[in-house]
Amino acid sequence: MSNSILKEKLNNTIIGIFGLSNTKANIEGILNQILYIIKDSLNIPAAFICLYNNISKSLSIFSQAGFDTANINSSCYPKIGRPCTGAITEKCAVAYGKSEVCSEDIQNVLYGNRFAASDLAEEMSVIHVPLLSDNTGTGILHIIVPKKL
Image (cartoon, rainbow, N blue to C red):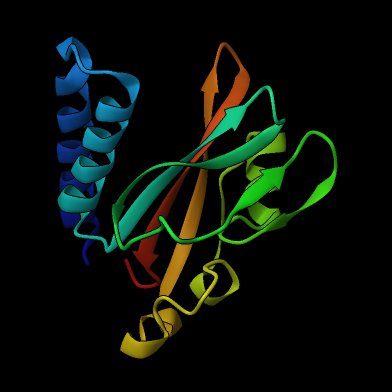
């Protein structure tokens, strides 16, 4: 994909997300709308958001667009040093803990070989984007993208 096409898609994505600023939906509804805007604008197979729970001290999947993540048993405890399991990986914890964008090959991330049958695992990566509020990590946006985006 050329840089100009990618820039146009990213601009359309941002415009779509800004268009939600006057939405009176609950947080889950808004996050789902954001994910579908990202997925559809960039023509990617999936995106999902993990939010941090202050009570359990863990990150867990909150919203998703694309493939079914409902049956993925995932948890990550970035603040207490417990290992990550399921769909969340150590790079995800790095993204959360250091507020850095990280990426890795999809086969290292998704549990249960969700892409194995379609051979997408060889062609996809996941980007972990930390979500911040007042300079504090509140979650992570995970975007499944082709390696050759």
